[in-house]
Image (cartoon, rainbow, N blue to C red; front, side, top):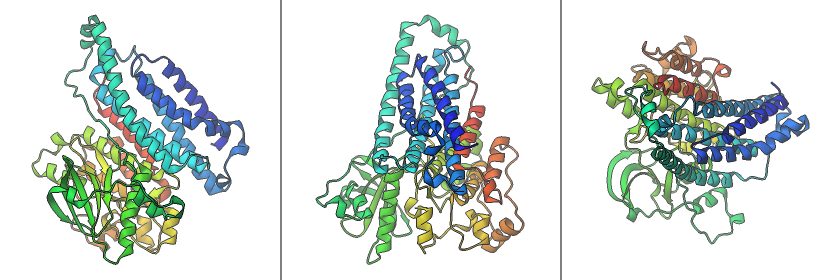
Length: 494
């Protein structure tokens, strides 16, 4: 489908969403915020829909047009999902008591759609060379996420108030409820790091100096009760208490190696730029003297691999990690990758493994380790090669050591991660690098999935592990398919 037609379909779908928003009875604040996000998106889309002359220059080449059309197609699919989601909250099919009992689940869905709109809008605006600045949009997103949480709480109070005003409806609605339903409560927090003051003129500062100046400096003396010491790539990692809160600390022994400083500040820059609740939140840094520090939110359950190992040891893996939870964790990770791949220019993680996905106490999974993440252009310029874990290398990377990592190679690696989520096992356990290479590249085999794995989950994992990179889904498609799978696994609401 051409860009002109896609833009017209986006405009048409947005109008249908506006019509649904006008009819809402509950969750009015969250509906309004969704509308505000779509309002940000519509001016450039309406311009594209008015004339083919407004297609940007970079989309005039065959490859550029393909990528731009794919981006617009992703936005169209997202708006269609939002339209269907709002329709599912229709008062006739979804009684008010259901909304009250499943307010956590509804809030979760609002959060996901809102963040997807944020980063896809940001990427499109930057792609169209609009006046919005990327870092400004990142801070807008951070503020919006905080406001979203406040609005969700206000909407829930209104919903409870409505029931106090009409208790006669409760008994009728209760009779319709499916028994044994467990409410899912997931509250997203994504606090903006307050910028530090700097006496330097920003126009004379390097990119990483500007990043450093914008970050909260956390003195090591403020960190107490240190524990969980582990060897990191550039220094020691541990947990500590900071202002009454448990945090995770990554230390960097700089010495005379400026490249280590660059990795640290690149990670900070990427986290500021990407600003999403699906990446581990950066609280602050210490860059005054060696060792340098990055201070992150604490993810209590550790990395995904540790979680899978711990639940499989006692034979209760399916009780602790039922398929609904496994699919939700896979969706969390896919949303993080989708954020990275949908910035402008897109960012490749380049080291997607089960060790870089961390899990909090509420089983939410987030991406970490973005210090080596990079844009395609910077990968081409750099001679530095990331030390990849062989278990996650894509066929094209095995075939050509000089192959430049791209979104497709990230997706292949994430397919292996989802295989771990589904199976609980370690990929290629007992095989060395040459055996893995033969298995993947020459035999073109895929690790088998357990028979109990839901069919749609199995198909998605297999699609991500396709030998031909062009046949793999993009991150947005993975999100779409996992959201549909999650809905089918969750118990019926009405």
